[in-house]
Image (cartoon, rainbow, N blue to C red; front, side, top):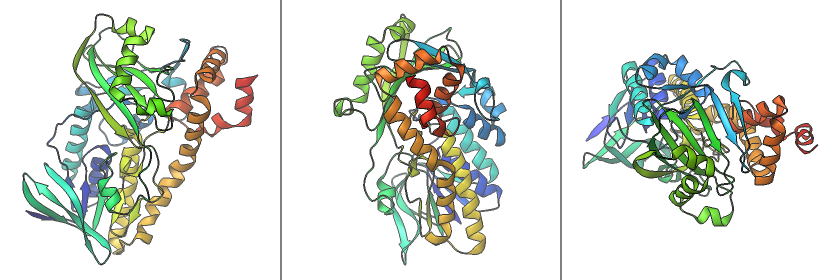
Length: 404
């Protein structure tokens, strides 16, 4: 089995579908591959922050998402380890962003994004398990694997890897000098009616520097989960994420109260997260997009916003490079530079936020003071959610506000 195209996109999640849709809209013959048939389950928190909503609005998908059951969320409620909480409305936060977020299962979101790519002209092949890269004179010229159990190849002068946190193909491309630390999440669905339409973030002491969450969904359901971030204590890193989940739902008093009488729907499912922002995002004939480039928020783990934006950025550079007939690493490095200009300083600051602030005593102190100081409250929410460049959160002036 063999296909040819101008660009191959491996992975039909948000990054891959956004890239494929943009390329196709620019007249590029694009082949989108995925190992699954859609719709398919995707383990995630299912929460979309205002930056994600902004991109989805630009793509014209908001009406379809809401028709499919997306729930508008009005803000975020942050719980410190000691139990104190603060709540911030999305309409109060920084930037010219939508005044709401969304929650929607990834099964639905990803299927609609794929449909959008196909309507733009992308060709989609499901059940294509890519296990290797094709090369010619040092350049990637396609992929190989199995499709419906048969050996298959797809050839193109440019390949985009949108394979999420999985690293085998990224390692084969030579774009990771070493395997980076990986964060992990676990979630389950619950029948849980009458929840406020806010995203609950619980910085439970058993999870730090990670956190637990309760995200309301339409239809009287909720996504309940935990994130165990890379860089935590060795003991907590060694604990299976599902074990951390069970501890969170059975030992956190506030969560226990909310889940009293609720019925769990289906199993607890775990998943990896990459938050490292890869130093190299291209080689001859190949680009990395979304979480394949380590683009998930180092504090919240949110990745859809970065996936959509990086997919659109990659598509623009790819279309320009194809027109010029130059798909060398040096030409494609324009994408890497744009990516790092957009995100690198924010990721460095978010790393400091995680190291400095995601500690039990510090969080208790911040939330206590933020209850009386609105500016500190907004700053904390912006930093945690990545809604603005968190550089201010790690400034000496901010540290003084917290400590004194």
